[in-house]
Length: 88
Image (cartoon, rainbow, N blue to C red):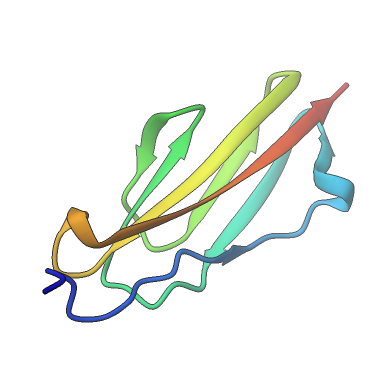
């Protein structure tokens, strides 16, 4: 038997033209997942456990944003990852 009582699905939405933004841009990442626990990562570093994330991109480069979600335990987790390119 699976330890997961329900299937979890990580999902979030955001607005960024072609996943590119100018330096100094804030993006709101809206959690659309069906879970009760979440953790946001920037380049594999935890940056928030809030439901939604607002992040100010103040450096040039490519950044990986990941949302990890779970319900009963982290053994029942799912992740969604995207990349944002920050331009000058």
